[in-house]
Length: 485
Ligand code: NAD
Ligand code: 6OH
Image 1: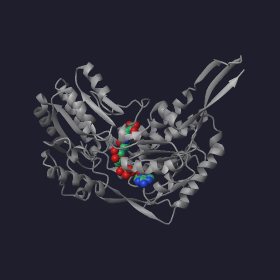
Image 2: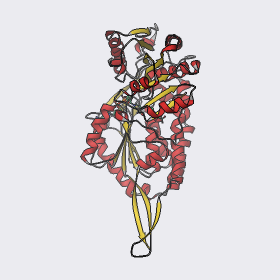
Image 3: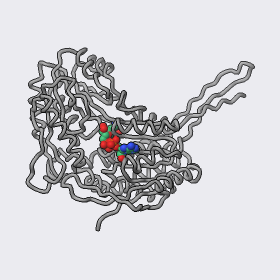
Image 4: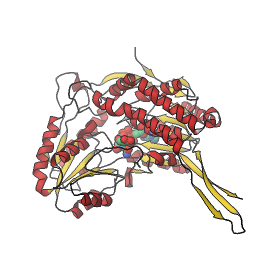
C-alpha cells in the first residue's frame, strides 16, 4: 500500500485534494505520496499557531518548554530506526552518514536549545535618574509569535530541526515546511511532537512546493511574525521581498561557493583528506561544501594527484552497500543541473582531472540520480563553474603564489558562507581567517560544529546568525522595561 504523508495542523492530520510523489534517488523508485497543502490548509495552520500562542503553549514557562523539547529529543531517539529508514529512503544517504549525522543531530538540536533556553540571560542596567532616585532598565524577551520554517533537502531533519527547536524553545508556535523532495522525517517529527504532548498548534507541518504552493502561501501570509529559511540565495531574495511587505524579521542560510585554501606548509595528508571531505561529502550536497580549491604552487601537482586518488576511491551506491560514501543527487532535476555544469566546464576549457559523467552500474541504480565525483583544473576565476554554486560532488583546483593573492581570489565572489584554510603556520591561519569574507572559517578542519557558535553567511550567503544564543536572539524580541524607584 502506498504511504500518504499528511499535513499536521492543530494537532490533526489533514489531507487535501492534491498529492505529489517522492522518489528514492538511488533507483528512482516511488517512496510515498504526499498531501500538498493548499491555501486553506496554510490559513488553518496560521490560525492554529496563533491560537496556540494565546492558549496552552503560550502559557508554558521556559522550563516547561524545555522539558517538552527534551521529550521530543527522547522521541526521536526512541524511534531512531524509523527516522533512519525514512531519511535514507528520501535522500539516498548512506546508513553510516544518516546514523552518525542526520538523525543524531535531529535529536541534539532539540536538546541543546532545550538546555539553553533555561540559561538565556537578560540584560540589566542601573542608572541614576536626573531628578534623583534610581532607575533599573532590564530586558524582557517575548517570542516573535508565529514563525515559518522553510527547509531544504540536503540534510532534511538536521536543517529543519536546527530552526524548529530554537523557535519553540523561545516560545514561538511554528509552521514548518520541509522540502518537497524530503518530507518523511518531518512527518515523523510531527508524530513525535504529538506523542511528547506538545499542545495542538504549537508545531504545525505543511507539505508542498515553493512557488504557488505551500512555501509561497506560508511566506506571504499576513499572520506570520517571522521567517527562517535555508535554501538557495535566489529563493531567499523572493522570500525577503514577501517579508518586506509587512516588515517581518528573516533569518536566512543560503548558498555558497566556498573556497578551500591549501598552503604549501600544510599537513599534506590532512589537507587532502579534509578537502576531499569538503568537496565530496554527501555528494557535494551540503551548503558548506567546497567547490573552489586554491593550492600553493609548490605542492599543486602533487595535491591534484592525491585529490584525484581520493575522488576515484569514492564508492557510489546503495545506502547499505559496504563502504559506500557517494550518494546520488537528490532528484533527476538536480542531477541534470549538475551534469549541465559538467558539460559547461568542458565548454569553458577545463581540464577534467577525473569524473565528468555518470557512473554505470548495470542494475537498478542506473535509474537513480548518480553523478561521478569530478575535479577540474585549468580555468581562470571568471569561469562560470568557478563562480556559480553547483551543489554537486565537484571542485575546480587552481594554483596560487601568495597569501595576499589567494585572499583576494577567495573573496572575489558574491557568496560568503564558509572557507577552510590548511596551514601549519598558526599565525597565518588566524591572519587569513580574519581576511576571508565568510561567516564560518575552519583552520585545518571542515564542518566541525559546536552548536553554540554563530552559524550563517555574509554577502549572498545569508542574513543573520543562528546557533546557541544567536538563535534565541532571533526567535525572540526584547522589550526594555525601565523602572524608576
Ligand atoms: P530551494 O531554495 O530551492 O528550496 C528550499 C526550500 O524553499 C524548499 O522547502 C522549497 O520548497 C522552498 N521554496 C522554494 N521556492 C520558494 C518560494 N518562492 N517561497 C517559499 N518557499 C520556497 O533550495 P534547495 O534546492 O532545497 O536546497 C539547495 C540550496 O540550499 C543550495 O543553494 C544550498 O546552498 C542551500 N543551502 C544552504 C544552507 C545554509 O546553511 N546556508 C544549507 C542547506 C542548503
Ligand atoms: C547546509 O547544508 C548545512 C548546514 C549545517 C548546519 O546548519 C548545521 O547546523 O550543522
